[in-house]
Structure formats: C-alpha cells, structure tokens
Image (cartoon, rainbow, N blue to C red; front, side, top):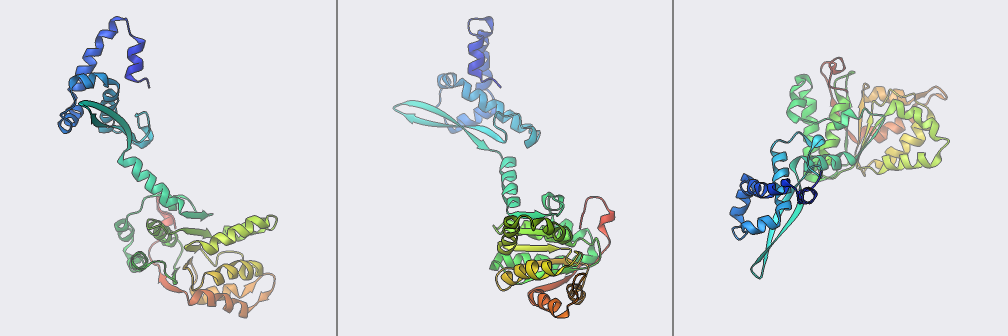
Amino acid sequence: MESLADLLKQFSGTPLWKNREEIRKQVATDPAVCEWRLLHPEVTDEEISLNLNKFYQFVKERNNCSQCPGLERCPNDFEGHYTVLSVETTQDRCYIYDRKASCDKFITKQNQDSIRSRIRSFYVDERSLNQGYSADEILSKDWERAAAVDQIMDYILKTKEQGLQRQGLYLAGPFGTGKTFLMCYMLYELAKVGLTGAIVYMPDFSEDLKSMFQDPQKLKETIDLLKETDLLVLDDIGAENMNPWLRDHVLGTILNYRMNRKPTFFTSNYELDDLEKHFSFTSKDGEEEFKGQRIMDRIRHFVEVVHVTGYNKRSKAGETE
C-alpha cells in the first residue's frame, strides 16, 4: 500500500494536489489524533502538516484496528501491528517519531506459538494439541470423569507451585473416554510455565522404530529427546506390537533414565497388572515373566493411577481421545 507521501508526489502539480489540505483537516480532526494531542499539547498544526504521512498512517491503522477482521486478514502494512507516535522536544522544536506496536491478537498468537513449540508430538493428532482448552469445558463435558479431571488439575497445580515432580500419572480407562485429550491439556498448561513435553502414540511408534534401524542417528536423537524432555506421555501403551527390543532396549532405556529424575505419564486401556502381562509375552520369545516385572518396576512405583470413566467421545465430533 502506498504511503501518503508517495501518493502526494504522484499527483504533485495536478488538481489533486489541492486535496492535501483536505486530507490534513481530516487527519487533524480524527478522534484518535485529537485524543493523542491532549497528551501532547505542544504539537502544533504546522508540525502535524510537516508529519502528515506519519499521522495519516496512524489514523488509517487505528481505524483498521477498530474494525479488526482478525489477525489472518489484518489490513495493516505489518500484520498484527499498528503505528504509535511519540514526541521529543528539543530547543523549542517537536520531533515526531513513529514505530510499530504489536496488537493483543498478535501477542496472544506469539504466546500460543511459544507454548506449542515446547511440546513435541509423535504420531498424535495435532488437533489434540492445537485446539484451545477450557478447564470448565473439560470438567463439564462428561461429569463421569470429574474425579479423574480433579486429579489431573491437582497435579498441574502442584507442579506449577513446586516444580517438576518425580512421579507421573497412569490414566487407565475404556476406549474414547478422553485420556489422550486430558494429557494434551496437561502438557499445554505446563508448557505455559516453561516446561517441555512430548507425547508418543505407542502403536505407531513401535512400527516406525523398525525403519530407524536403518538410521541409527535418528534413533539415538529420538530416544535422547524422550529421555530428556521434562514431561513424557506414552499414549495408548499396551496397544503396540510388543517385541523384546522395544521393551528392553527402547522403553527400558527411556524409563530407567527418567525414574527419580523426570515424570512419565501413560494412557492405557489396561490396568497395571494387565499391562505387566502384556510386557511379559512377545511373539518372538514367548513368555518372559521376569522381564515383564522388571519394566513394570520402572512404571508402577513412579505413577499415580487415575481411572478415567465416562462415555465414548469418539462417537461425537470435536473431541479425540
């Protein structure tokens, strides 16, 4: 968009040049300029004329903001910003400066982007992380899971007040009751206070690990990330195709590193005893009860169990588990 100075130069020497005074009058009588001049009574009409381009931009962008169509359709020259004018008086002369300031919508988006950048997602639907969250809505959406929501809210509050906990949560319950959704909410809330997080959908992760055999560096980087992130959610654990390598060298390594250091969280359709049976049998080696117990020792003693009940929300649009 052309500035007023460029526009006036273009039409200099033509009848349209006579409109400059009319434009100056419109700018000078604009409510935003009148309000601004109350704060800066030292600014004269002549100085407004000398800085007409700045005042024109100031008025145009303030008017755009008063009828804001949303950040994505912001008509201002610099999306999400508007012109701010300031004055410096030196030796009885006023110097008027303009700068760009961020609007509330732009600041909100920046904050949200910063929060989301702290959360890594592996094979989990991004909508679960990118949608807005309302604590009241989470609680009222299904009163049958109110007790579980209360436990998670208490955990979030405790972490915010005391810092990163050593103990995590184990969310057990039927299909579609919102276990993943609640963990995404927790990650989002704790990312607000600067904690990093990762959520891993275990069935897809276990399959993708096969391709990582061909890329040892990617495998190492992935495992290191899951070991070091502040908050780790292993989603739908027990639904993966279990094999000795995944159990002993991937999960075992991650959980062994994190226990007594950083909390790990789980969602599952299994109770803890049933999960132990899942870990105790692989298609390759058959029954290995001792190895199942060993990995469960790295889970059972480092989680608080949360039973999530309620109706299956997957049958309703707008919420995923």
